[in-house]
Length: 333
Image 1 (cartoon, helix red, strand yellow):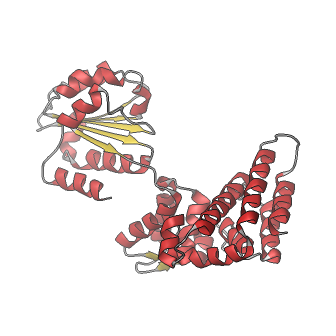
Image 2 (cartoon, helix red, strand yellow):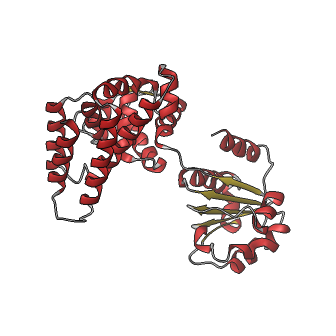
Image 3 (cartoon, helix red, strand yellow):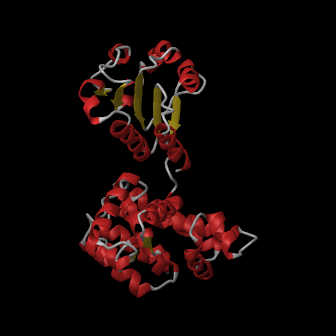
């Protein structure tokens, strides 16, 4: 976040680089920086002749370099944005000679998603010297809730931990998807709202009572009745609650529980940091640890791996509902 603020601040101050190479696993920030450059470097009247969008699948490195070497028309500079630049990965090193001596009146932007340049090769070294390289790293699941809180805080909203966790468990770590859902909430709810699970249920369509978050909680507490209610709901709504996601989240929970059992320092903050969860949820792990000794946790992880294999049709054909019910029975008994 600070790096992005610095990029924006540098551009505002007129310190504009001739090359911006935006790369990495998380496309959200690549798009944000690229969009900012597209919207702000040139005046509206200058964009018609001096701003060009190219696509990696349609353009060659030679095409891009040729366009970048042109002079701007009635403007201080031109902007060329290469979207989906990862499609050029096989030939990207051909950009070296241009990167070593870029056109000072051109701002050349590459959106190189899901991949990154090899730091050992000439191109990375050349751009690092004459331009700017930004690597957008994918957030871990336990970092996304904090990201949601920061984004909402910047827009004068707050969110309860359970509501943030519901979004993460439903949408995963895709920041673009999460951002789209947050925008919906912001349009509907007044500023200063503290977003809770009911807001998520009413406006995004995730049930506040029947979701993987509540299943994990009820399994940890060995609440057999509630856990069975939730999996029966999942069986009736399989598209909204895919088995692969449920298995993955339960596996993460029991893997964290295994780490918990091995900790010497079981103070709340130390546990939160060690297993990668918010301190708000740590009490659930203390309860689950009492219900599942280390040997049982190891056994449950084996059950989850077996269910994962069955869910992929290996060995026998079981319905998703039957696999989940069998798995839950084994975990809880």
